[in-house]
Length: 91
Image (cartoon, rainbow, N blue to C red):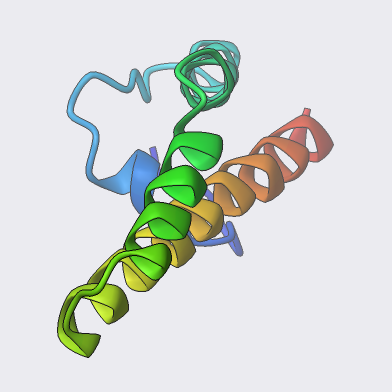
C-alpha cells in the first residue's frame, strides 16, 4: 500500500513487522511504535547517555556520535507522530 503524499517515516519504512494490508492495521502499528518509544524511554535514555558523554573526557568524535544518536531518535519519534497524524487524516 502506497499512500499518496505521505510524509516519510524511516521507522516505518525500515520495519518489516508493519502491516500495510489495511489503514487501520497501519495506524495500530504506528501507535505501537510510538508506544515503544515512550515505554522504553528511548529519547530520555539517549539524552542521559549524551549528558554522561558530555561530562566525560572523550574525543570529539565520540561526543558527535552520541549527539547524532540523540538527534536521530528525536527525529524518528517526530516522524512517527507526524505520520500518525497524516494517517488519521486519511480516514
